[in-house]
Figure (cartoon, rainbow, N blue to C red):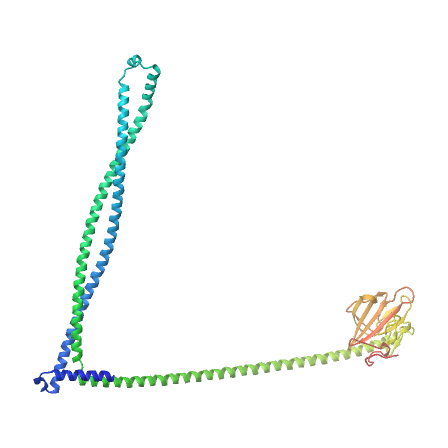
Amino acid sequence: MGGELFASFVVIAGLILAQPANAQSEAPKDTLKRVEQQLQTGKQRQQQLERQSQALQTELDTLRGRLIALADQARGQEQTLDQLEDSLTALEGEERERSAGLDAERQQIATLLAALQRLARIPPEAALARPESPVDTLRSALLLRDAVPALKARADALSQALTALADTRGKLVDQRAKALAARVALTEKQDEMNRLIARREELSRQTEEERVQVGQRMADLSGQATDLRQLMERIEAERRAAIEAAARREAERREAERREAAKREAEKREAERRLAAQKEAERKEAERKLAELRAAEQKIAEQKAAEEKRAKDEAAREAARERELAAKSPEDGPPAVSGMVLPAAGKLTTRFGEADRYGATSRGVTVQTRAGAAVVAPRGGTIVFAGPFKGYGLILIVEHGNGYHSLIAGLGRIETAVGRKVASGEPLAVMPPDGNPDLYFELRRNGQPINPQRGFGAPEGKGQG
């Protein structure tokens, strides 16, 4: 900016110093007015020269397009002329070959015709009187007879060849005419191209001269285009524009900061809202799960209480049935141990914890019974297994409640079924019908064997009786 101001000041100073002496005595206002008038005139002339230059350039572009099109047409006609000349050369060679062949064929046919005419003019009686032998005469006649069709065929072929030769000569004439027309058209295109090229060079020269003149005039006018007042006004305008641009940039920056802050605040509020909503959802979910857990615990407690009540009621009913059955049972029925009825009557041969006949520690008791003795339930309960099992033979398993199970083995026949409820002392099976069979009885509580002789309610673990 400083360099432009200095250059403008130098130009204005030069213009003032370049004025005549009488012009230097002019008032600054008159000098400024005269310079502005010259500047206006120079601008008008500059616009006029610009329009002329554009018109010349348009005409020059048009001529260039026409010149390119003519050059393409000339190249096409040159190619066409080359093809016509090649075709003309080929036709001329073909005509020479056909003419030579026809001349040779014509001479051969003429010779044959002369010979045949001589043979045909001899009468038959004269042929008989000739000095040749009859065989030669016959050969001549046969030759005459065979030559006539061949001669006719060759004459027909000669006629067709003459017709083809005439067609070839006609094509040759047409091709020569086309070649001549192509040469004339090519010459015309070349002449037109030469005229356009000359016109193009002339317009280019005029355009270049006008362009130089315009450039010089623009240089002269640009030296007079700025005076001190216009320069100061432009400086002031640029200063105001710079201040306005800076103010706009500052306002845009503040607006961008405001929008960014608002965006961050909105994002923060949204994040807080989502976090609060998540926490509220988690709290509600925790409350729901807690309520479900409490309801489940309440339900389990109620079920447990109901189960305990049912177990107590069942135990009371079972005790009543056992008392009733004990009162009704004969004196010679199955023995009772600690208030519990043994499954069968007989002799106790192995007690709990003693070594059995195999040397292993017994986990139950063994009773030697009579053949076919009845086997009863030691206490009321439910049949959970009835049938053969590995090396134990037929066995029964009775569930009594409160974790108690009875296992009875060594049976001969089972007379109950799985799932059936039985009372204390109720017949379940019979022992084998032969000898003195052994009945094995094992009492378990929570899966652990206990001493059957101590009965139900006894402490868990092994014991001796």
